[in-house]
Length: 458
Image (cartoon, rainbow, N blue to C red; front, top):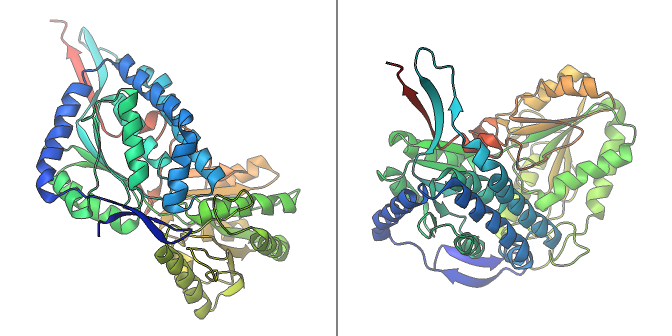
């Protein structure tokens, strides 16, 4: 059986298989990408921007088709799938509109010369290794800035996202991106390593697990290739106070259950003051119990299946391990007695540092709630993990909340919102959440030759 298989997590029925890349195609693939790069970099900037604008238009035109593909592949609720398609379109359009200005040469103080300026040039073929949880969005935030810059792309998507990855390639090519400037490759991890060893390839961007990131970064470093990694997260949500606890709980539950909890920047750890703790926990339990779990194509469904039965069972096992180590399970955490990769949303409390759940990422519809007695204790709890993707602080005093947010060891700190993603904002983390940034002007600053051109006055 091919490793690239569409198995619908709602029905657990395998619907389609895809032929994989063979080992003897690796060299040809890298050379094709190099040829594509050499042609694509010479396409005028305005024409590259126009191709990205047409890509955005096609995403919107084919939104229903694109959304249906990922609902089938990884179980995303239809409304959320449509929202992701629109976000990807917005990213392509942002770079189409702003990319040309970001590539304008920057004059410097001549410092004794007739001219000193910085140019922004592409570096060559890049490999993208993408995850299944946001099949379009996470590809767009890597692909859009690098195609705008003039790099070429070899895209290795998750093995369950073969259909959506083919759709993305089809749309980009229809929009005017050269065939060999964007290549969809059904490759395995060993083949990715071979690509990174190839002289033609200049860098790699990976979004995924710590294990995958470490493996790719090691190969890239050995071969002196640039890497950007966006890995896991266990984001804190610090509640200072609230004028409307019911609304705060609603926002918290919605954020945690979005994408069935399968988001690296989802708020996974809720850190709540003693005075609000019991009411917050009770309200969160009610919200999780009321969330409709079911078929992602049903308009009443709030929580769809996890991406696979294996993923569901992993999360259920993490919950049970936490309970066996002394945590309190307030609700949920067990698979539903029906076909499909469904799990009843769970709320865990009384988690201590000696438990696995304290330090690991739970990639599913599970909330962990902690109590605190002082703001210093809350900040210590928030920072006492090896992840550092994002975090949020919630309160009525915005200045105080911002001061607390400034103490979080994260790449993205929010006040009274969590996980906001917009095309012009930087995305990325610190510590074991990875390194490098995507989106905005920062997304064009990773795989770029920041080239000095200096002209002597003599």
